[in-house]
Amino acid sequence: MASKKIAVIGGGIFGLEIATALMGAGHKVTLFEKENGVMLKTTSNNQNRLHLGLHYPRDMKTARQSRFGFDKFIKKYPGSVRTGFTNYYAVSSESTQTSTEAFVEFAKTAEIPIMPISPNGARDCGFNVELIDSLWACKEAVVDIEVYRKLALKAAVSVNLPIMLSTEISSANFDGRLWTLNSNGVDKGSFEFIVRATYGQDRMTINVTPENPIVYEFQQTLVFEVSSKAKLFGLTVVDGDFVTILPRGFSGNFLIYSPLPSVLNRYVGESVPRSWNFDDQHMIESSFKKVSERAVMYAPVLGEISLTNVLTAIRALQPFVSKTDQRVSFHTNPYPNFYDIQSGKIDHAIEIAESLCALLPA
Ligand SMILES: Cc1cc2nc3c(=O)[nH]c(=O)nc-3n(C[C@H](O)[C@H](O)[C@H](O)COP(=O)(O)OP(=O)(O)OC[C@H]3O[C@@H](n4cnc5c(N)ncnc54)[C@H](O)[C@@H]3O)c2cc1C
Image (cartoon, rainbow, N blue to C red; front, side):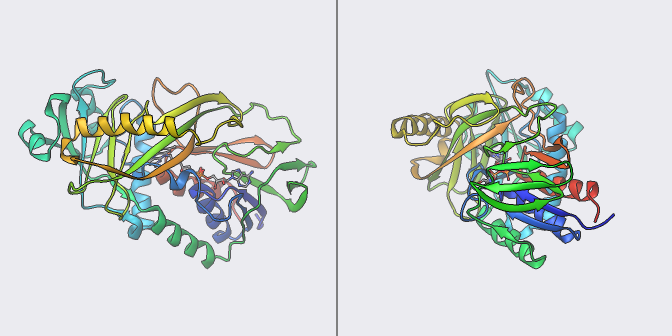
């Protein structure tokens, strides 16, 4: 095998990890990113949970991938991971898609340690025990994305990875041997392999018909950063339209999110609707009202909270996964010498980068 000329499109956590790993493995890699910096899109605007897998009691595959991704991520970027706060999962007392028994069985099968907290303990934590069937402490963590960005960029610099910022790839043409990339009329060179890690958010035209067109469920999402006088903790109520409260990295603030009120729009198709933007202040305020009320309802310990920041992002899921809530990460090969990344969780990025290195030995 020989070193290959590879373009990675998209500088989120997946693109950056993959490009750095392929370059480190001996390939000639160029990373193209549309924005004027890396990791400015969904990677920086999510709930920042370093998943252990507990959030997905209906999908063992997601749980297992997260469980392994968690260990890999902490080992590689320990300085970016915040641990040491008390972190809980609660099984809701009503309308949940799991049950206390099923959750315990799932955690055991997935080999994720959880520790029971008694109703008195839950009350002492400042949670609303009326709404909670059972409470569990776990060792899940959060990632400070700003710290991670610095560490990941340092790794990229150490292998001399060229990063082309403010370069939106608009088309890719395959001549049977090489791919030629174009950025809005400007030739960006020819490559033997393409890795697309745009989280479904490019609008590239490609001159080859894919065997299976890629379809996503896109969601327009809001995560709210709030300040509170409460001591930092994490609380995730499963499994359904409840709430997640987590510290935001090392900031001292919390991030809050709720599956239905935090999602402004959904669309199933090949690309994000052009009409989507985050300009509707009324919708944002109404979402914040619902999410914050829900957070305080489950965790009265939060007390008065003030909004400090609104994190806006588009999520790209495999469509029709609502039954299992599956969030796995994998790569597909829809065109010749062209790999597409489907991203589920941030801590899966290292495994996917390793997998591509194994597929493309230098
Ligand atoms: C509300 C919400 C909460 C979430 N919470 C968590 C969580 O707590 N924990 C977790 O693990 N995961 C979470 N996720 C999922 C996680 O955020 C994503 O899986 C991950 O960030 C995707 O990373 P990425 O690199 O694939 O995409 P992105 O970070 O979006 O990167 C894609 C990059 O491609 C670039 N790009 C797009 N088109 C082009 C083009 N044509 N040319 C060049 N560049 C282009 C974009 O500018 C962007 O920088 C959450 C997602 C959402 C939406």
